[in-house]
Image (cartoon, rainbow, N blue to C red; front, side, top):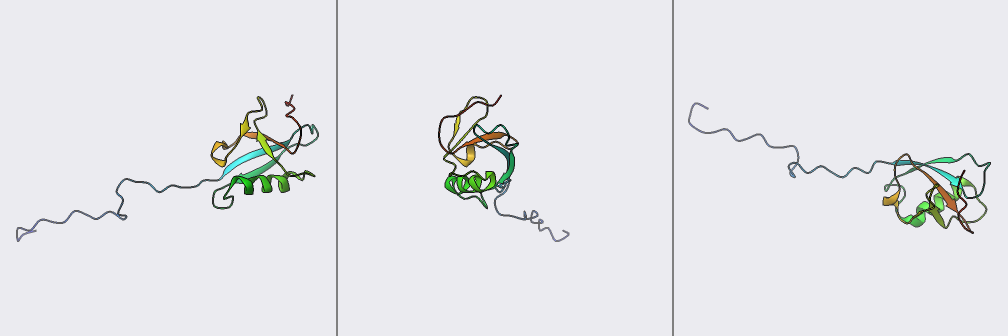
Length: 107
């Protein structure tokens, strides 16, 4: 400016600088029923906005797969490693739901 004053730097649109907001992107997973070789899998979107707790996820998995008993456990299809939280679910992966009994490997 011609009167000797300096311009103020442009203000950022938010007050946190370079901190990015946490975005909860839904994870798309495929669920299979333990021991049912005729079940072709059901796709399910998992988001913290809609699925708040692990118990809610298990309830939704029960409804989605249409099993007679409530889903109690979720495991990986190859090694049977148990999944215990929503954070452990990986986008694009497949999982096997167990209502009762032991895990039967696919394949």
